[in-house]
Structure formats: structure tokens, C-alpha cells
Amino acid sequence: MSNRIFTWKFFAICFVCAVLCIYALPNFTKVNSQYLPSQSINYGLDLRGGSQLLLKVNFQAYLKDQLDVTANMIRKTLRKEKLYYSDLKVSANSISMNTSSADSAQMIKKQIQKLDSDFDIEINRTSLLVKFNDSKLQSLQYSLLEQTQEIIRYRIDEVGTKEPSIQRQGEWGILLQVPGLSDPSQLKTILGKTAKLSFHLIDEDSSIEQAMKGFVPSNDMLLQGDDGQSWYLVKKDSIVGGDMLTNAKFSNNDNGQPAVSFSFNSLGARFFADITRNNRNKRLAIVLDNRVLSAPVINEPIVGGSGIISGNFTIASANELAMLLRAGALPAPVDIVEEKIVGPSLGEDSIVLGKKSAIIGSLAVMLFMIFTYGSFGVFASIALIFNIIFILALMTIMQATLTLPGIAGIVLTIGMAVDANVLIFERIREEASGGAIGSYTIKRGFEQAFATILDSNLTTLIAALFLYAFGSGTIKGFAVTLTVGILSSMFTAITLTKIFISVWLSSTKKHSL
Image 1 (cartoon, rainbow, N blue to C red):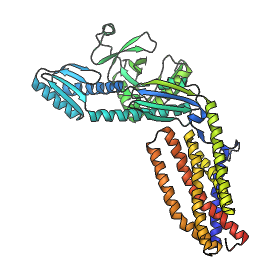
Image 2 (cartoon, one colour):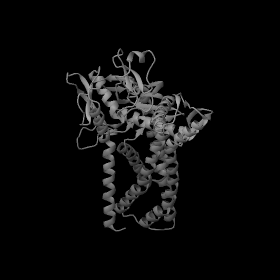
Image 3 (cartoon, one colour):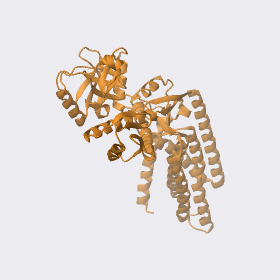
């Protein structure tokens, strides 16, 4: 290796080491400079303390909503095709209806299958029973849980918490862990609301009194007002839904009361403009979670794609509703079935014990290396210290969450980090025993050991990646630190140690080892 190349490599490695040390610094002391990184590693629930909620997604309510939508599609299709039906009803998991004859039932079955091939349709003389098949139910289940997890994450991020852990738990459960949150009351409030917003026209041609007696028209819904006293008869078909919102924020109405301003995307704005243009002087119900917030009269077309929701809001409730609308509506209600609060004192004890184990393990490994390999053991020990610093730096840059199993991963990495040095030093011993000169011995030792080191670390890295991909939260914490530790130890054990030894040989001008 020429001196020019060696100098370039030396300064490049020194630069990388300096940058990583700067990123690791906030984990050891508070950094107040605006020019230096100030973020430190995020501690998990088991170290920092916080709240843990076990949520259960109400799939039956979601399935009922899907069947209601399907029933409306069936009604429109059969009316368009002029096919007779009666007593169309939606139950918990099916749609039933009657027809005038067996031939009519067969014709209706064909029309329903054209709508969606994922239906199982049973015919019993002149009656039909429509259900989703097993494949469709599995697809609905998967999409429901995926969508629910993402919306929960958006809502929690809006609250300002860091690194929440959201995982599947069983068939319908979601395990939510929020480190650093000692009072989960606000969390439970925002998770307990579906926040399903929609706009409906008021049915002014039907009698509200008859509806309250149980005679609700098939195309209508009887909904209670947000004040808990008034009732409204609204059309089932929504003009536009909350899924077309692009923004929602706290505002004030014309009377200076707290409200929520909103804006639609281009498609929603067009729908909203068309409906308000064609229904002047009619009332428009703003419905949130099956309660009517307000029902203003449409005085003129609303063409700007934006508006204001008024209701019985406080500043806090208006801000909360705006946040929920920005995050999106939950596709199904979520019930909190279990709640745990982990105290920070338990986390502090775990951190102290974890630090002690890491320090004791590091010292033991260093003493062994120095006793066995002398000066080379000193270089390996210095590289090991840098390895620990680099692990902390990389996890800080990634903003990964450090858990108790993660500390175990770091301690394990400390022992594994010097394995590479042991292989290299033993190869150097073999070369030196043959009478090779110092620089050549070092070069051959590193080259001969590299393939073995790469194979052993690569197999461990593959195992760590599979642990992260298929493991639960605690296993993932272990896998993250193990992966980062392997990558860091490869750099420190091979590159950094080689630089130390090369500089030492150059300064001492040794020709034999």
C-alpha cells in the first residue's frame, strides 16, 4: 500500500469515526449547541416506562358496514334491471331477500354475481341469502387490520409521542405501546372515536314523528343530534365522505365560537358543489359517528371545496376533531380490552443493570485480549470501545428504539466483536512464525481471515434479519441492535484495528513480530 493511499484511507476513516462520535455524544451528555446533533436513542416501554393498551377491532361492525354498502348496490342494480324483490334485509353476516318465483331468484343471483364474484349465494325456492365467501372475508380482515394500524399510528403521531410500537396481537387484537406516556387518558379518547365524517341531505318529505315510532323509510336513517335532544331523518346515501378531505384545522365560525374548517380534494369539491347547487334551500346534515353535528340550510352553492363544521365545541374538542379528521376515520370501532402502565422506576433499574452488564462484559473481554495478544489486544480493546460508540450513534441516527432485549443484543455483540480480531491475530501469529516481515505478516493475516469473518457475520446477519421480519416487538429490539452491532463490529474489527496496527508499525519501524 503506498503512503498516499494509506494517508487518504486514514483521514477518511478518522472523519467517519468523528462524525459517529458526534452523533453518539447526546447519549452521554446534554448537547446545547445548534450546530451539533441533540437527539439521543429512544428508550422502549420496558426501559422508559409508559402505557400499553390492548385493542380489539370490531370486525362484525366493519362487516355490517360492508354489507350495508353492498345492499345499496344490489337495490340500485335490481331497480335498474326492473327485477322484483321484497324484504331485503342486512343481518350480522348476510343479506337476505325474497322474490316472486324461482326463475326470478336465478336472474337476481346472476345480477348480484356480476356486481362481485366474491359472493356465496344460496337459493331456497323464492328466497336468497347472500354472503361473502371465505377468501373475501380473509381479504377484508387483512385490509381492516392494516388500515386500522396505520390510522392509529397517524393519530398517535399527531399527539406528539415518539416511537410507538403497534403490533398485531392474535386474530383481531392490536398491541399498542407508547413509551413515556404515563397518563393514557388522551390516548384512549382519540382511539375510542371512529371519526367517520359524512354529509347527507335531510329527508324533509317524510315524517320525523313516524320515524321515531319505528317507521323509518328504507332509504333513510334516524340519527340523534350532537346535543342529545334533537333527532334528524337523513338520507342514507352520503353526498361526500371524510375520505375526500385533504385538511382539517381549528377555526371559529361567524359567531366566534370554536369550529373546524375543512377542505376537500378536487373530486370531493366537485361532488359537493354539484349537490349544493342542485339542492338550494334544503338542509344538509353534517354527520360524525352517526350523530348530527349540525344541519344548516344550503343558501347557495359551495364551490370552493371548503367549509366550516359548527357544533357544541370547546377549543380542545375542536382541535381534537380536526386532528382525527386529518388522521382519517377508523374503518371499524376499536375497543380497549386491557390497559397497563409501566412505571419509569422499573425502566431506570433495567437501564442501570444493562449498563453494568455492558461495562463488565467489555472490561472482561478487553482484559482477555490484552493478556492474550499484548499490544494487539490493546488495539482490539480500543476498537471495541469505538464499536460500542458506533452502535449508539447508528441507533441514534436511525432513531431506533432501545429495549431491554436490545441491551442484551449489544452485550452479545461485544463478545462477538472480538471474534474477528482473534481470527486475524491467530493468522498473523501463523505468518510470523514462518519468519515473514511485519508489514507483510499483517497484510496476509487480515487477507486470510477476511473470508471466514465475512461468512460467520453474514450468517448471523441473515438470522437477525429474519428475527426482525417475523419476530414480535421484543424480538425485533434484539434483532435491531444485533444487526447494527454486526455491521459496526465488521468496520471496527477489520478496518479500524488494521489502521491502528499499521500506524503502530510505521511509528515503531518494526520489521518482525
